[in-house]
Image 1: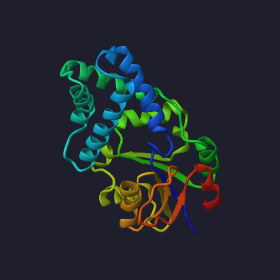
Image 2: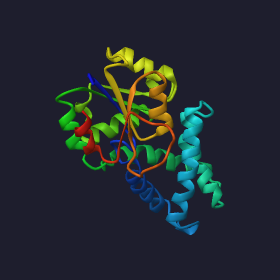
Image 3: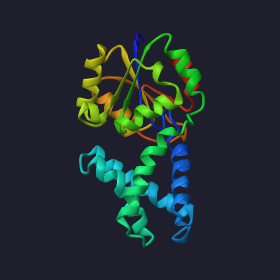
Amino acid sequence: MNYKHIFFDLDRTIWDFDANSIETIKEIFTRYDLISYCTFEDFHEIYREINDNLWRDYRDNKTTKENLSWQRFYLTNKHFGNINESLSKHMSNDYIAISPTKTQMLPNAIETLEYLHKKYKLHIITNGFTDVQYNKLENCGIKNYFNSIFTSEEVGCNKPNADFFNFVILKTGANTLNSIIIGDDIDVDIKGAAEVGIDTIWFNPTNEKDDFKSNYEIKNLAELKEIL
């Protein structure tokens, strides 16, 4: 192995998207007194399903950033009989403002980045929105670990599009032989990178099953010290 460049996904790989999102949505749910419509648990369950579907559409260029941002709240509210479009847009703005201030990270993230950045050039590759992702990195105090940060908005296409991976390889001066990609999404991060010949490490803390074989598979970021 002659790796020089390590490309990290951000959400659910370093930044604890699920924990931070729950915190944020709880604040919004309380702020707008939505308990009169439903319980938080029911609201979050529907929101998560709708949000995942809209992100899938966004990756496939079937919706826009703007529509995704507010319709995930509008469609959730509508499910519970609340069709106030203005309310949903306020909730969307609040989410985008509050979410990146949350700083929970996956276990051993800081220690692992501290170890790796002394030996390799580290990069972020993410489909998340540019302003939000940069704020997350700043607020968590980890931006300085990375030589470069690439968002799908800046690149002009989303993972798993081959053009995304080819773009970041070119821009960093890396090549497919000295690079490895770490991510939690088997379809978006792992299969996408493998399609263009880049080695992969599937971060799989929940022990999901898939027939595709990544070069490596880990359940905890600390295991990277055994590979790299």
